[in-house]
Amino acid sequence: MSDTTTEPKFPADVRKMTFEQAMAELEEIVRALEDGDVGLDESITAYERGAMLRRYCEVKLKDAEVKIEKIVAKAGGALTTEPLDLD
Image (tube, rainbow, N blue to C red; front, side, top):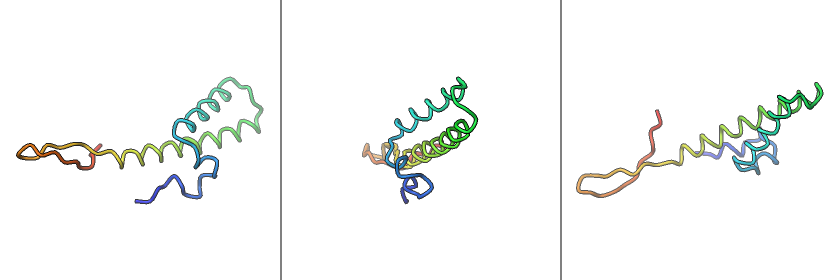
């Protein structure tokens, strides 16, 4: 499976972010928009950046879900792993 976080739709500065960094910036944007601390043009730019950060966080979470495995006990007590079914 390809790493979707490196798709060109995310600028280089965002692709370098961890999930936590992206969430922190997103929270700052939401706070500023809720407080009304920015003008209209700045609000639009901030909203667009926030929407992109939200999508990036969703992709990072989806990538993490794919990597999660569950430990399963097989007959005879042997342990193995298999993909976690979240559905």
